Amino acid sequence: MLELPQQLAIGSAHSKLILVGEHAVVYGEPAIALPFPSIHVKSIVQPNEGPVLLESSFYVGPLNSIPEKLKGIATCIKQTCKKLNREPNGFRMHIKSTIPIGRGLGSSAAIATAVVRSLYHFFNEPLSKDDLLELVHMAETYAHGSPSGIDMEAVTSDAPIWFEKDKRSKKVDIKQAFHIVVADTGRIGDTHAAVSSIKEKYKSITDQTKYSIKSLGHLTKEAKRALKDGDLDALGDILNRAQDELVHLGVSDAGIDYLVKVARQAGALGAKLTGGGRGGCIIALAKHAVHAKKLAERFLHAGADQTWHFQIGSDENQYTTTTVSGS
Ligand code: MEV
Image (cartoon, rainbow, N blue to C red; front, side, top):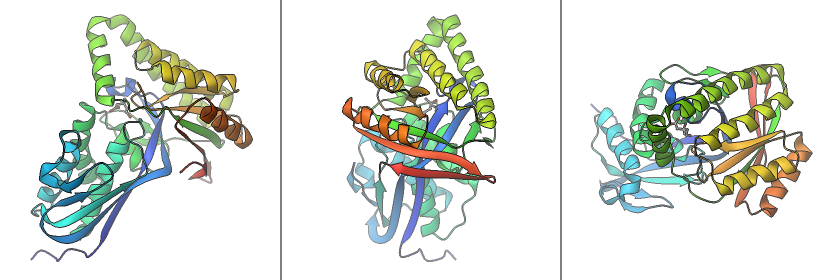
């Protein structure tokens, strides 16, 4: 006998930032991602007669009429119901997100994670990490084409992670807390297109592309060491060098380059794009909390759509993330 569903079920997930290694991670190089809990998604499921009704800021209506761009969410809901041996009807789902879409902040992985968690909760079923990752992967394949899997690992982790494709992610040692400022160009980037463009480059300009990908892998290893040693100057330099490689790979653009320049002129220890690029956000490593505040002001003055400032560190092996400003 199947149990009666809950009257109200909630699933949530937070955003993520890639510190270093994006794109190269698709080719088997390591990357480091940070949880970014300042912004998050909540999926709320309630019983409702008839076909599934979806309510969100990007679409309101029956699941079966969802626009093509959002088919990943529909697939995620249907596949989750299938896995649970339930029909995809008899409920409404309200998705509330403070993660702007298409900014390299993991919105698609966070939405899928929140959706799966809310449906398991609704149907009173325990959810294993493997089942969660399998279901989110399906939605991510819609969003990214051939995702490495880093986004879904990062949005389900409370700690910074060291990620390599097809391997279990590991926690990263952080000796000294650091301040990151995120600045949003306000423009939607297309991760799917950015990943495909590098794939094309890999076929035509092989040596140069391979070199940049390998370099990003080395930089990620150096970043791991810098975090372990608490060497923020070294970390900043690594972020700058990673940005150079991402420029070579063709995934930066004029708007990102401009904000990176603003960050460096304002004394950031390092700055680079984060996520897929070609629009989206940059991250800047600040010297300290007061400097982070100044950086955030400079970004807004330079035309950034929005900024977030947060601190990440570890306290007796407990990772701490504190939102200082932003949503
Ligand atoms: C997107 O957040 C990260 C990319 O490396 C794509 C992926 O790893 O799936 C650009």
